[in-house]
Image 1: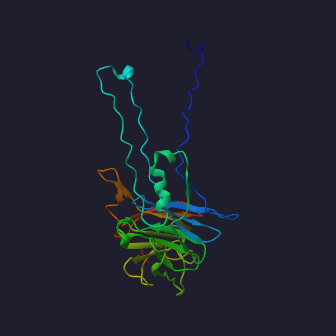
Image 2: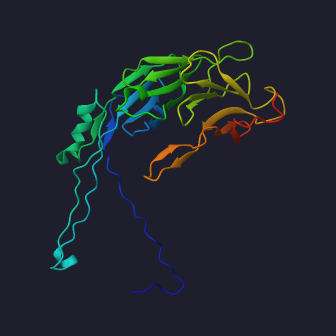
Length: 285
């Protein structure tokens, strides 16, 4: 029966619940919650930080089952057509080490209806509240030398942590114009992993760039203005820093072909600027 004249049918939303694969059971305490979360570049780990206990936590990603496709019946495809199916035996691998047995529990069809009780594989205790963290962009679990992440904590150096042992591999110390070490609000790698960008300092509008293979205090400094209070350049405290990514032919994301171009976001006043550190501004101080 058609709609009455002058009336239109309201489209129905298609809603469904996603399949729950795992839920954490080890984040406890009043007011203790994750501050962000980040998949490792190879997709096999999840990194997060919990605010009350100042822990950087690493979880192994549970293997994913391929959803079963609908198998047509003979009435749907005809008597002379073979009935097909799908092979759902493949599942994503899991990183070796603690937590591996938990992840493998999802590889059995009989356990798919029971979510995994997820526990961290390892943790690192930060010296103070963590402001920012980032994976080494070329990280792959099959190569332990690449398994590392950065973290910046209040009043602490930038630390490079080993993702297998949680040990500190290296430290980087930004110093301001008063020769005081100052921790950044934002820290990240360049897409090729050769440089570390630190920004969001309270004393000046600067970006410190460290060579990943040269820990310590030596850094290149980029200025967003002649001074903290000058009217030129991008104003406000830096709150975000990002590099472009491009999609490869296989559909996966890779680092930018131009690792010198990056975006900076600030608050109070809010703004987003794009920079290229290969092209110095004529007005540089």
